[in-house]
Image 1 (cartoon, rainbow, N blue to C red):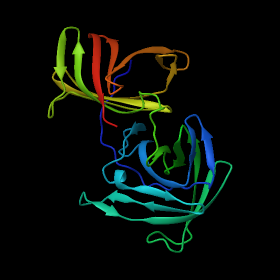
Image 2 (image 1 turned 90 degrees about the vertical axis):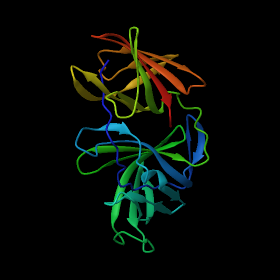
Image 3 (image 1 turned 30 degrees about the horizontal axis):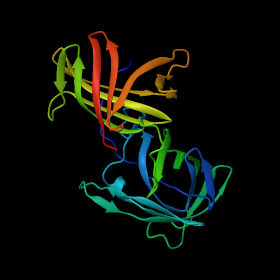
Image 4 (image 1 turned 30 degrees about the vertical axis):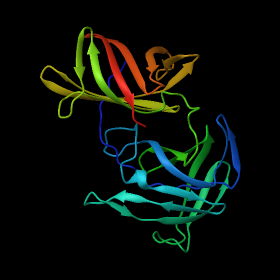
Length: 261
């Protein structure tokens, strides 16, 4: 199994829209009309490669209020002074063939009136998935609707933080300020595992992306379609605790994670 590294994430500027009808999906029917927030995203903010991550604290305050013909993006972004700056922008829109066609509305508090943009969208398992290009890469944003139950989704999805790292009979606890850190951000579309670990007097920072599937109760890495690899994953404590085991050159490793999102 590949090893990975943790790095900071900064949420990107988002444009979102919706059609004014219900979309049927695996988790039931959820109307696109209402308030949505950014859950996780797939992007590259610091030229270290595309990966799955979580929005920063400012983006977490943002939400998208979707009506039949208008979207109000109540957006907070991280300013130069590290404070969240409020910059709402409103759009008029139409939709066709899985694409939102948007124009900055006349009553928008910010943005150039009439400026247009477009974005691919789909509803899947009650989530709103947006795809667009930021000028360099194809970005994915996963939005969830406020007050909707997402417990039907696979327990692996979400954000996991490593609490300890066990190699054979040796156990190392994750502590602030030390070179041992692990994080998994997972979605049905993919997953990223970040790992900082000491080796030969240096702190190795690694990051890898995966594609995965679940068959029955087993998880498989299908990043390389010619090599399907079984993942040794086990859940406990009502799916809030997870172990992820792998064989490495240094022996059998078991990583212990707690779900935080």
